[in-house]
Length: 275
Image (cartoon, rainbow, N blue to C red; front, side, top):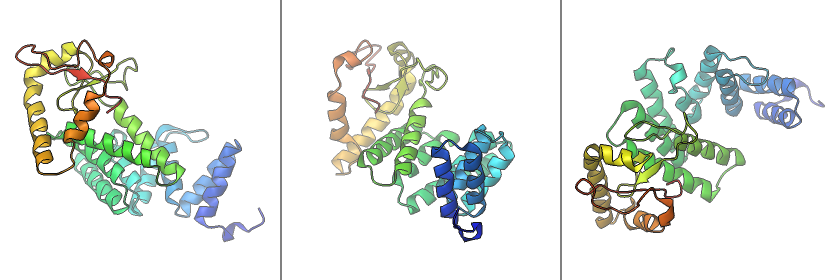
């Protein structure tokens, strides 16, 4: 280096760590990533926390250290760090109420940063934690917001990667409303969405039919809410969503994508190109 280390900023150190990473020099990357984190670089703090959380090349898994680094990043306003504090791995460190508080802070921080897509994703994750009635609607809204942000490609490459990671995680952690089948646990599972409400997922038509009496009330409420919003002039789905559903090829459905009368009017399930 042509400069004394004391002349380097946290951003400089982070760039050196990145260069070492791309050259395959893992020990050097780890050294400069830590120095950048200690100097206050938010990205370095979050990456170091993630490395400790899962165990990365040259970094031994240490949930205590992961918590400390996420906490330092969260204290600087990082919504990514705040969200990660809500993850299940930290339930041995934080109370449930404290994790909920971090979740709400992450939503507000993301909105303040103009990252509405991640704000929607955090709202969905918080709804899952709390088991609220609108969890499926939150999931559909988060999926739509993340895909729109990725398509717009506004921001740095790292931002697009983070958005895609959140979208992939959302898709992997969906589960069948009836049996709980989840692609995260079994990659062969292919979920399809109710063709009426476009928010609740099933792994087969059998599962849909078996739990239709339970899902029907939620389905009707979501559809009614969407129709009311459409008539009120709000863009919360309505015609635009139906056009997408109508464009799905019949061959992409399981047994049927129509709303044929089964057990008093059971809806269908469709594969809307990862709605």
